[in-house]
Length: 352
View 1 (cartoon, rainbow, N blue to C red):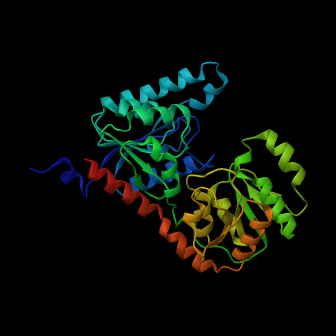
View 2 (view 1 turned 135 degrees about the vertical axis):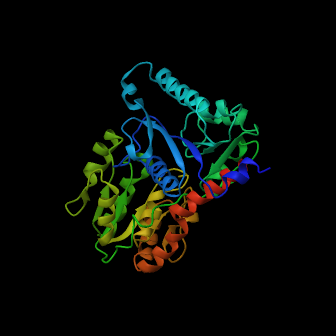
View 3 (view 1 turned 120 degrees about the vertical axis):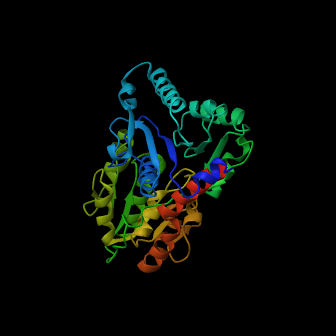
């Protein structure tokens, strides 16, 4: 008699995907987590699997959304209570419907706690550093046989290792290479994109560009208005351009004239999808040796600053400028969305 795993291999799966409910899984993406969840769900569907995505109600309807109103509750004094109720509702729905596996991409502790006694495998991809409630839940529960954890980089695995009782699976993030074709054909300006907050280091990128005498184009949502008003606005010079919060197709179009994409983060970033998106477009990257950055590049696709200062970052940018676009793109192809999705599916099959 065939096991459930044998029956599912090569056939479609029914996957419950849990996202953060606070922000829509739709363009323009607020950050890397939203982009990751969207692209992975699209690829699961393309590969022939059935998904239900538990996410904010304004998420992409093509992803079979069961929607919640998480962001609106920010104005309520009892936001945490509402958020807990949302996740309890999600978990109850999963219990009452037949799924093969749960892929949890939220940063909430309740799917972890619930997963200890769930009847199907619960796979959580860790996207955030160890934070209080999530860290506590994982420390207490991660020894359960039904809980499984995926980490997107080796450096991030080291961050979480002390709290994971049964280890984890390494699966690098990937991007849709067709959505980010090679486009770089000029070297006119430095480029930066991401959420505009202190941790992302846009001010550092501006300072480096000015010392080099190269214009900087940058894009992204202003998530910290005080930081933008006090640290970014005063730095913007006449040749610099703030492009606003863009769709991915518009971001890609601006890669055509980018000489280098600058990464100046101030934190240990778990992965860094923007690096792969730039390299896929043929744009080399230069950045600080923080988080997963060094894992994502090679000598043909980017350069790492030896120290975390402007002088060292400029040296890395200068090293990256002459890199050949076709070689940059070739390296990015190691991080394809299809490879990532197939690795997840294979992992799910192992667990069933």
